[in-house]
Image (cartoon, rainbow, N blue to C red):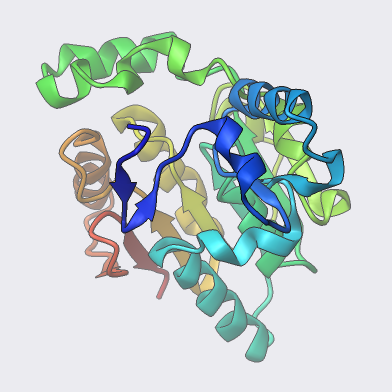
Length: 258
């Protein structure tokens, strides 16, 4: 792709960086292995170390990557805080911590539970999903456990702005959180698969404060069809209709506790 353009910007060879005047070299990839490779290459080009920035770990650049979902989190946090609504926050399905760090930032005075195996999908949950014969999922990168190689508690915690507010719940959900008795004002469910998403609703809905929000990622996804199925099943189990509203990203649905 060298010599071509992307969004009107030229794509250049790494060596051509030296021909430019620049303040920082911003590394915009979430893979820690790729970040290390780029940093090492930049140093071999004699680019000063202090100019090479991993933007996913540098709080100065966080707002450059705020998408619709993150904007929703920010706005909801401001609304919750302005009304002195109590409750802690949680995320289930943390992966590399790239959304958890924003929850930690926007809810700085609340305990943040991070629930994940930190090793990828549970084998049984994954096999169930594959058995549903959703070809979009089975042919995707998410069906391969190697996709989740670059994660881990230390890697995620390195991105947290207020690490003292974070409670790690490592293991299979919901077994990993059976001792949690807190009330919650915001929960981000991003576990992708039918079984864990259904268990997430079963565990958290009764723990949500009035006007609390459960944000479901991938509700409108063609790959993770189990998310919407989990909501339908949960409503059938309870005999209720949960208040639902799309947040505008074409992917996520907010459930509001009333």
